[in-house]
Length: 96
Image (cartoon, rainbow, N blue to C red):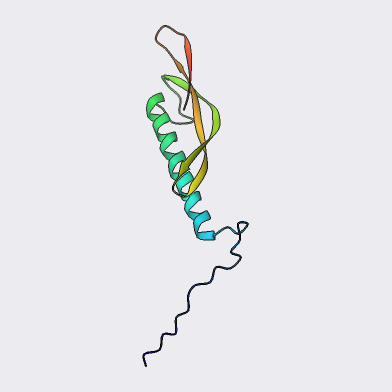
């Protein structure tokens, strides 16, 4: 039996409106990975976790949506913002 029974893959809904569920899953994982990295970096910079109390170097100050362009196209991530307290008592805003 030498006959090939595999057929060339057909793309269902092959127009621009169709979204591949695998690609959507990869995009979501990439977004989550980048957001976790940014949160961990801010936690290290502040010296405390999100709801921890004690001596602080600053305070979390919301999020800002930023768009990154990667090999899978544009991905929107939520970047955390913070206000750092300087040694002289002044506050400085930091956003990526």
